[in-house]
Length: 170
Image (cartoon, rainbow, N blue to C red; front, side):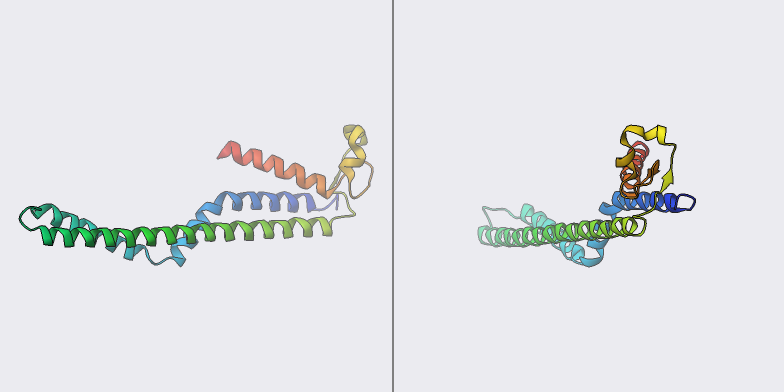
């Protein structure tokens, strides 16, 4: 594996995972819009409430109390219905965000485990032993090759470097 492309494969996988992680909020928002078609209904309710409030402001409370009270009750009822609707939509958005995050982390874990499984015995790259002398066995884990960098160490280093790089860019 040291002479091959595995270091690039691991780095690319880590970069892709971190890029997708930064896009999770946008993905959640998109899926919320796709699955929730109630935005038009909410907008209609808001417009209806505004119209009723304008009508209410044009009515004299002293002269037409019964009509004023009926309209006020209708406004309150529609407002309560809108609040309930918004609350349920918000709860559904939270569920969608949660599911998207869970799916992402499961897929990321599966990818990392498959990379570790495939390249368990081979070092990703081989460095001169002097460079990593005190930590040679730890860095070589799980391959055990002297001077080698194991897949787990390479994944940790790549994750950290990519996260710092993306944080600096974004």
